[in-house]
Image (cartoon, rainbow, N blue to C red; front, side, top):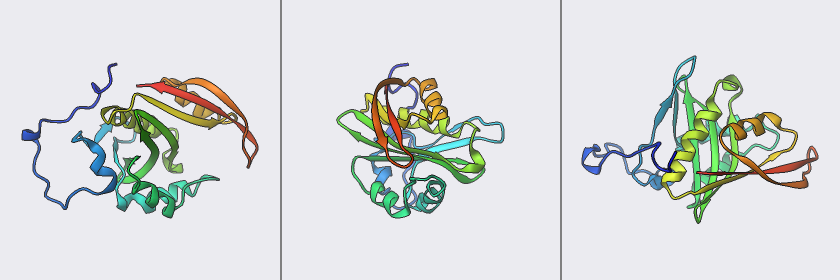
Amino acid sequence: MVCGQRLTAPPASARPAPAAPAMKDNEKRTNDMQQETTAPREAGPILCRFMRETDVPACAAIEACADDGWSEAALREELAQENARLFVAEAEGKVAGLAVFQLVCGEASLYAVSTAPAFRRQGVARALLSWAFAALCLQGAQDVFLEVRAQNSAAQALYRSLGFVQTGLRRNFYATPADDAVLMQKTL
């Protein structure tokens, strides 16, 4: 599929004027694209959108479930960065997952993707990443890069199913626990 065909913005004349205060941080970088979309899910739809400042506590709680998760302060700091692109997935009215990217010179780097324990294995990460790739593509990304623990076969399988290919291996990259990093890339 050609970049940009998966997610389109309505013409400026068709968009309603914002009723709320001006967008901040991450939302300013939307390039006037549609900001939300839903994906089917057995237990209800998944809403994918750009992260807002008000999402940070819920996202930090999800990250706290990981050994090396992002703190609330780290997420706030990242959200304020010009090149940062942070996304969330909502299910059942709750933040169910998040993804953190940096976008520089047409290359997006995936730094983190996490799903709340109650929503794992329900397609949340797949829907979120698919939507994020479309959003990143509209913002000029041509490729997405990531590194994943060699022992994390479930994540590698997800990434492969989304079109990533392995491009390299960094021996002994992770310290606790010790593990290699598998380098992967996807062209958008």
